[in-house]
Amino acid sequence: MPIKYITADELAAVIKDPAKKPGEDYLVVDVRDDDYAGGNIPGGRNIPSRDFHLHVNDLIKQAHEKELKLVVFHCSLSQQRGPKAARVYSEIRGNLYPALKDSPDREVAILRDGFSSFQAKFRNDPKLVENWEKDVWDNQYH
View 1 (cartoon, one colour):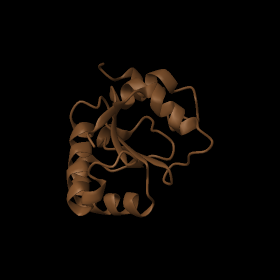
View 2: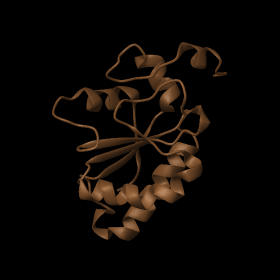
View 3: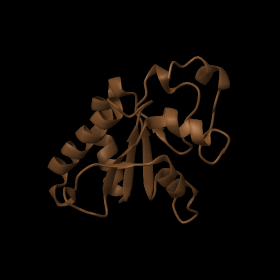
View 4: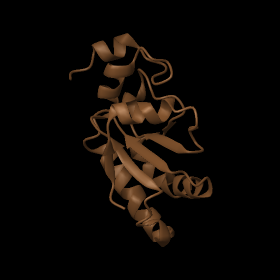
């Protein structure tokens, strides 16, 4: 199954769906490093990109054991770190669990435009963004 992009609105709908629980039905993996400060998606898991290779096998095993239907990766802009983590995760998962390689019910996705865009749209909704800090985002250069 190819890696797809998921929009901020699509991810927000997943998170707000009362029938879905983070870590049971889906998982958001935030691979931001030092730029993790300033806000995050509730229920998400931060695995800094610099350490991702150390944790990817455990992440795959946990997702497999919980039969997660959707794993979404992102970084600040989802241009490099998020897509790379999604690709590495997908490739290693395909090697460890070949039956999942083309499984339509085990999706791997990348948050289009990353957390920067997500927080700009949803920062005032505590169900979608927590630990948001205005000063951090006022000092960003995007």
